[in-house]
Picture 1 (cartoon, rainbow, N blue to C red):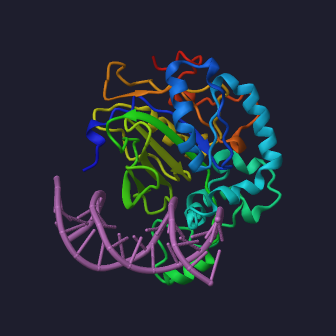
Picture 2: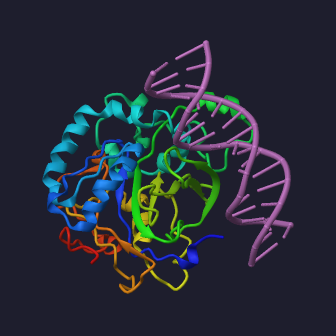
Length: 306
DNA sequence: CGACTTTGACCAGCGC
DNA sequence: GCGCTGGTCAAAGTCG
C-alpha cells in the first residue's frame, strides 16, 4: 500500500517549523521552479502556519528570525492552536527525553505555556502518545493534554507517490479531507512505540504533483534501516535531523537533497526551496553540522537540484 | 496472527 | 453560541 517502493525522494523540499512563523521570499531571485513554489505553495504552507523564505534571502530570513523570536512567541500557540490539539502529547515523549529537540530550547520562551517548544514542556503527561495511555480515558486525557507544539519540518516534494521513504516506519492513523483541496491529508505516526514523531502528507491542491510532507517531533531512535535499494535519500537525511544529535542543524543557504539519489530519477524531482522554522535558526553561519554529510551539500539557490 | 490501512466518529479550537 | 475545520481515536478490514 505504501508507495515506498516507487518512491523517489529525489525531489524534496524542506522546511522546518515550530514557530509557525514562516516567511516567503519574493520570486525575483529564484529559478522558475522556485518561483513556482513560492507562488503556488505559499498559501498552502501558510495553512500550516508557515512562511517560506528563499535561501537567497537568508540574511533577511535571519533578521526575520530574530524578530520572530522576539515577537512571535505567541504565534506558536495561535497558528496551530486550532489544529494541533494533541500535538503536545506527541511532543512529550521523544522530545521530552531529547536534550534539545529542534534546538529550540536554547531560545528563551517568555510564555512556555503556549510555546510549541517541546523542550519547554514538562515531560509529564502522556509521554508516550504514540502508545497512548490505555488507562486514562480519552476524554480525560484530552483535557489534561495541553497542546504543545513540536518543532515541525516540512518537505515539498515533486513526486508521484505520496508517502516518501525516509528510513523510518510509519503507521497511518488518519486521513482527512482538506478544505479547498481535492486531495486528502494523511496522518502518520512513527511505529516506534517510544517515538511520537508524526507526519502529515498531503498533495498540493495547486499542483497535484507536489507532495507536502510535514514532520512533527523528533525521532528518539535510529531509523529502522534504509529504504529498499539501499538509497539514502534526502528524506532520510532530514528525518535524521530529528534525532537529538543533529536536531539543531540549520544551514543558511539551503540543502542539497540529491546525495545518493540517482539524478536520473523521474518520478519526482527536488524543488529547490528550503523552508525553515525561524525559531530554530541558530547562530547565523558557521554552524554547519558535522553531520552535514547526511544532509547533503549546500548548493547555491537556483542551482539546486537541477 | 501481527502489522498496517481505512474510515466514520468524536473532540477542541477558532471565527463569525 | 454555533458551525466549520483539523487532528485523533478506534473498530473493522486488509495484507503478508
